[in-house]
Length: 149
Image (cartoon, rainbow, N blue to C red):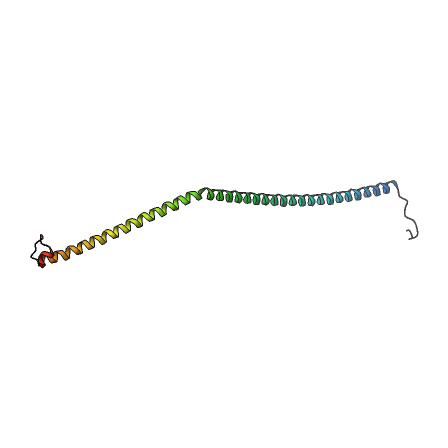
């Protein structure tokens, strides 16, 4: 048995080969681990870039939609204003025509009322004259002055 103070067996070629192999395995493991970490980091960075690009695209699309909407609103506003300005004379003519029709209707209504009043007075006179004629004996050729004389 060896004592604690005795040096270990000098490394032999087999031990050296095993040590070198172990070192190589550790190095490969470490390299693989580093490579995996790098790949994970790259994947995360790519995912972040993709998310950022998606957000940018969505933002750009929203801006484009907003600009399109604003453009459409302005175009509609301009069209409406232009149409209104173009139709102003048409509206004035229509308004004038409506007023003219209303005046003609009022005139016809007034003439109709006057005609009815005239007819009413005529019938009233006929009734009064007819009553007087009946009192005279029904003579249609006699007047009130003949009756009094």
